Length: 590
Image 1 (cartoon, one colour):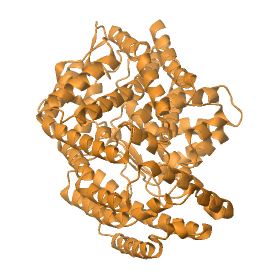
Image 2 (tube, one colour; image 1 turned 180 degrees about the horizontal axis):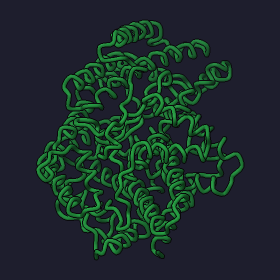
Image 3 (cartoon, one colour; image 1 turned 90 degrees about the vertical axis):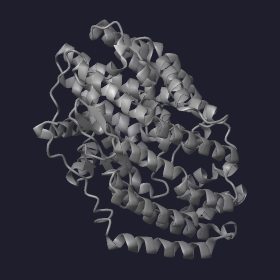
Image 4 (tube, helix red, strand yellow; image 1 turned 135 degrees about the vertical axis):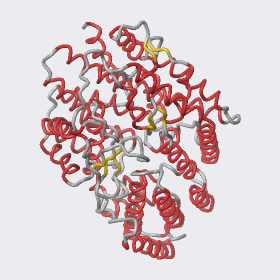
């Protein structure tokens, strides 16, 4: 870390609660428990007999409780994410989660009973009440689960046991990963620090870091395999009871996207492997003076790449100026995160090793977590997460029940923010070699977002399919990983035997199965969306903001229609992937 980056800002969680000892936490827990008891007494077993006005009142009361519980859970998680190895923090997080779970389990009846309302009756009520019509998108989404919901008692016990089941295994993964120390040339590094070494300009550093990562993951592979097997089996049981056709189907439903659209995305990306990743990594090997890349060269800087670290202040300027160039309103919204300490920036011991923007609740504000190391990729990560944050601010007006965007569309603003930042940096650069470095960096980001994430998705599919027939040994999981990675990377990269352990640190597999294809969906979508912007589409800015403001009220077809785009069409994915291919064409000519 350079001196310029020695005093990086931390977030201020006081808009949620002032501290873990805040009296408001205890007050909100008691308040939500009281509201739940009154709500249950008033509405349980009565939902199907309510008229339109009464149903609207019930939804409003339910939303109020969800807001309070969301505020509590957000604070507990963000406080925990600051240092996952601190027992005080992890204990607080677990205790809050258990108390929230106790309350929310009593509320499960509400959505289950809503799904018992006859279609004709609900349709009539929506025509009778304008107030209820506001919640039509939420009711639509709740009722999508009708074919997969169980009886009230089963739903309640599954919800309650989640804290000692899936949630407990996820916590074990998080704390195990956060606690790992990687031996690197006599130093003990955490996860964020060791992975940063993998993009060093010095190959010996990359190699030593890669070997250290492999060894540490190997030393812990049994526990990661146990976590993976347990969660895959847990999902298999859940899918069987809920009658989902495929392991990925529940994710598709939560994204409100059709199976065949996702299948088309996956097959399109896989078909493009030779034109994208296979071709690019051969070009990169040539630039690095190698016949083939080693796996630790995948994210290596190019020979003429600038080695200077980018200060935090410069990173802010680059991203905000990019946002402002597109729209002063976008830049103004982004500036709020810096002015109000909504970002936690520095890598720290025990801190969550990734990056995210947490939406919290509409009455508060989102929070961004980074592990800023001063690399170009860190600048792009800032642009990405700031896009999420702006999206979350804009969609908050939809309220607690409808602000969240399906994962496939949640990546829209983040990837668009990256694209703006990339184009800004490219336009400002006059040196042709440096331009190629910027393009190559973007290509690598796109390959990581599209090709790598679809390969991750294929890895998950294989794991979940095999788990139906019995426990999968750690070595088998490693072999599955190695085979799928080789297919996606091509013969331009040598995946050594010790690369086989690298599946074990990826949190998406543990926390949100099949989430990963959403990144590819978002990247291809934004490529097509940005093309419309470059074409000078009328009112593009206003259409873009309306898309972000919609939150979860509209589905992908409705959101993309104003731009003349349709993800169900075969050429949609091809056009998005063509953008990446065109960049590689430029690099191939240089």
